[in-house]
Amino acid sequence: MNREEFKAKFEIVSKSKEINDIIDIIMQVAKSDISVLLYGESGVGKEVFAKSIHGYSNRADKQLISVNCGAIPEGILESELFGHKKGSFTGAVEARKGYFELADGGTLFLDEIAETPLTTQVKLLRAIENKEFMRIGAETVTKVDVRIIAATNKDLQKEVAAKKFREDLYFRLKAVTLHIPPLRERKIDIEPLTLHFINKYCKNSNIPVPKLTNEALEILINYSWPGNIRELKNTIESVLALNNGKVLTDEHFLSLIPQAESFDNSRNLPVFTRKLPEDVDREIIYRALFEIKKDILELKEILLKQNEFEPSLNNNTFNDEEILNMEEIEKNTILKALEKTHWNKRKAAKLLNISERTLYRKLKEYDIKIW
Image 1 (tube, rainbow, N blue to C red):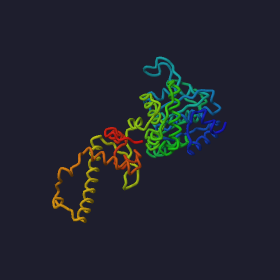
Image 2: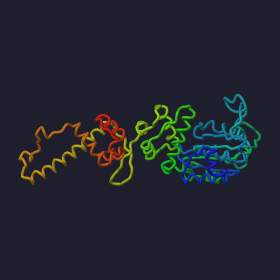
Image 3: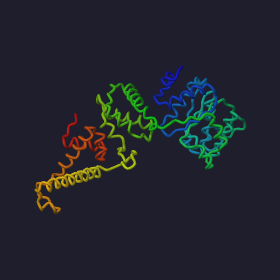
Image 4: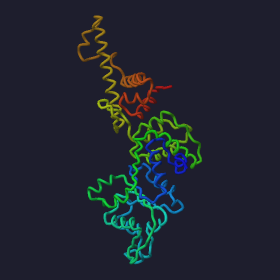
């Protein structure tokens, strides 16, 4: 099996070098029983990689048991991992196998491993090293053959330094460490992932696959995706559920992406702002008034040169003909921004320092057509 076949089998959608390098390592180590530690922000797909490691291993015909250590209350985590005997504590009305026993012969995926209490970490280390443990209330050990894959979104070295994670368990888990980069650092993957999620949702829902416009794709690529692949998937599915048209446009996504991107010209770095519609409208008016003031000053210079200047222009009053309707000011400012950006809506919105959503609303309000 080559890399592309591996990606197709385990539904790993990526064009980035970083992910391809990770897959190459997985294909090398999956056949062994060595422990693997997956680092990555929430939503990057750590479980997908854990499943691919198990699926490509010699244990693929056995179970992969996934455990979210952060989702299980501290008081019952030990029982969930190692099981218990009947009557060993209040509520233990029958004997129960833990995840280690259920994963015997297969793979145990310990997600959010950094959330494991220190008291449980001691028993976890012993179970991993000796491949044996004792159920709660039992007097004999239970032996198991389990391959361990762990995952975390925290820096375990810092957790060790802060005495929140055992150093010996950390070294036991990090035999092979894979860092999965966030989606914002591999934007080349956004397009194939988007198309994959669209096709998969439409197939499962038995609906026609809509076309994705270039403007819509541009918005997706330029968003930072703090929730990573999980957020992208949820956004795509929400748009498809709310719209049954044949085309997905930028307007469909602007209504769901919570933050509008603007640029800090002093630093040339993208920043994110959250603005209310009233604030946005006020900014348009301020910018328009600034432009009108510049035009009046230019006109004043021309009239002075032509000796046609009226004394009334020396004061701060204007006659009725010089006062423009505020709607006309706003409309003209938007048209100027569009002309300057060659009718690129995204660039025009940035020039005006407003969100694209507000720009679309104003285009409709003033019946401005863009071909």
